[in-house]
Image 1 (cartoon, helix red, strand yellow):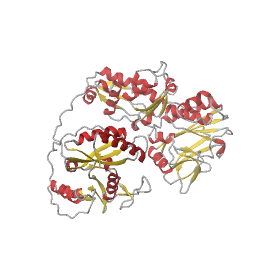
Image 2 (cartoon, rainbow, N blue to C red; image 1 turned 180 degrees about the vertical axis):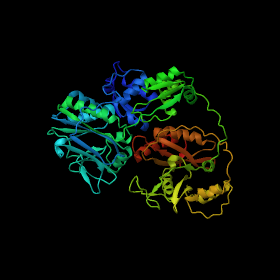
Image 3 (tube, one colour; image 1 turned 90 degrees about the horizontal axis):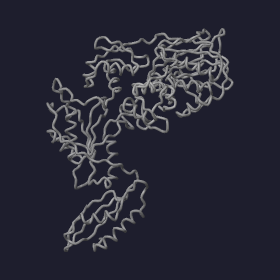
Length: 627
């Protein structure tokens, strides 16, 4: 989420540090930062905190706790907010209370729709939002400010019955459609939740996602009805996924937000709209069938220290909870915390310990050894034998790969498939591993391999059963071992008889069946520690291979020749190797394979030829003869 430092400053009397310092503070105590551009931070809010931190107020509260800076008094900070005056001009009917926990409607008459004031436009544009008009901008501002999605309907486009409006929240009917504000028509399934004009039963919005075009705000709008509601996160996510319509509002409902926040969003948006667009607040209608219950969570000083490995005293824990705005009562060594309504992530003592730890600072928590296990851990048979298989195959020059579990055909179709080209779960690994083999054979000169050997341990679905399979794919070279021979060696290594006739490369075996015949291990083997290797980026551009064979005097080492070849090849030479040697009449013939590749462009034959000409000249100066 884009967060503006200037916007955050409105929550503090004391000046905030610069944007980079704020980013560092959040990184070490709360969230990752994707980027910092000027005064704008792109904060990667974790899913468990989406309910309270997808807003400037949420991030401001985090910074208040981290930096120990007090927040300015917030006009809607009281726990029980009154939506006054009440009105019966809007009747709300929720037909699916499990999918809509609360619906608040606000009625304002006499607004003047037009451009937003400069401060409001600047706030929204600073975080990449386009200014639309003063009414819509006000609802968007409140959403990005405190995290409650809102929507405004043109009341003049809705029907009245006996002088009153009606708003309905219901599931869609089969074949029902609506033209949305993005000028696209959406067709609904019966599982989707809609907002409808209660008098006509016509859809005017997709619950929690997007409003409808017929009731959209225009310059001709005079009277408006504001929606501040709470919709089920799973329902919103599924609808957004099926319709391929993800919005800022849906992303917040998907994370699940407190129904209590709807009242704060309504009060803030109504007051702001009157401020920037005029009009008169007629009143509010609030349908809240099952109010959110407040909960308590307890943690002791002792438990906090055991989990963190610290020696904190009660005052330090109390200070951390106070900074986090987590009200508590002290009962002996216990802290009984009543989390604010928006903190839906606090359920157990460990949740509070995590909060205390991150505010104190993980860098201040000493590293301690884990306590010894009370009993010997059980050995996982599958894991044990898979690791044994890996070690053996790696020692035989294999590389492990992971291919897609999706395929063009199979027994099991995927309900929510990723793409139309592979709608089934794979029946075997052979098909995809054979494709990987072909790709790697093409690149084996670049890889410096004499023979490409690949294997995969993975899940397949066939004959209505899910099993684990091991598959070996080996490049066919007459002088080298085949996939069948290497598979037989694997079985012998496992202590089994290789009597089964296997297919040619790839050779695939039922690992689930094999493991059932193997003994149960009692302890894990002490496998050798892996050798640390230096990784470097690879080029996405094609390579060119050139071979050179030359006569040199007997006694000349191949390394001496390679040094000359490499010096003349320059930075385009990415691999070089000797592949043939023979002696005749006091001379030695060396044949080398040279692989050229660029990191910034596709090489041409001229690029490679120029390098080879330099090599030929250097070889001639040495008195060596190119064959």
